[in-house]
Length: 112
Image (cartoon, rainbow, N blue to C red; front, side, top):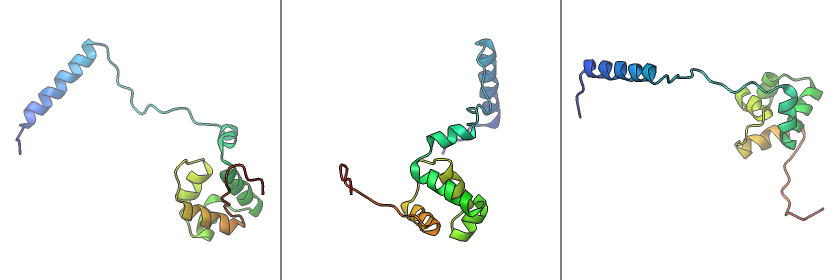
């Protein structure tokens, strides 16, 4: 293990800050992309997420209430409705089952 004195670490940090100022480099803090509007979110949703959102509204449940009644976490329900791209299929099936829906797998080209 290498021991580096605290004074050296502080000196390096000070030199970095001086270089940033000298080169006019700015560091953006908390740079976030602008929040999406409700309409933007709805237009980007998958059909499954749209079904969950609409069915929850039909039943009059909040996201928290749906999560509690279905046995899933509030975080999962919120992220799923916002269009999270990677989700666990067992949780999706559990949510759809609670709402009266189901996933169906078809071969591409099948119309039945």
